[in-house]
Image 1 (cartoon, helix red, strand yellow):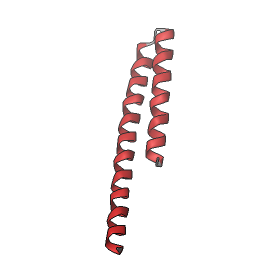
Image 2: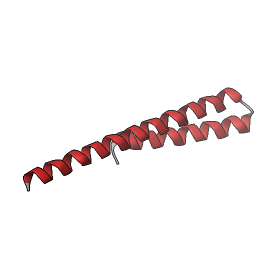
Image 3: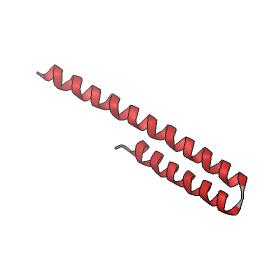
Image 4: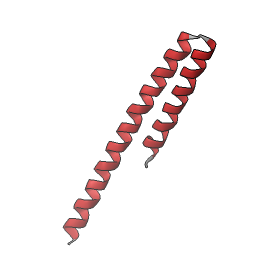
Length: 67
């Protein structure tokens, strides 16, 4: 996992906690903020996965060229 993937997962967890806190306290603004954080985290994690896959593909190409 790379930094973007880890930070994305952390952001998603933070968003879920905010949503739960918003439900407990009956605060729709906090729930909405949590949903936004969770969505942003998912996007960042997806970006990180893509970046990792591109890096792996480049490494594989480099190894194939060396052979």
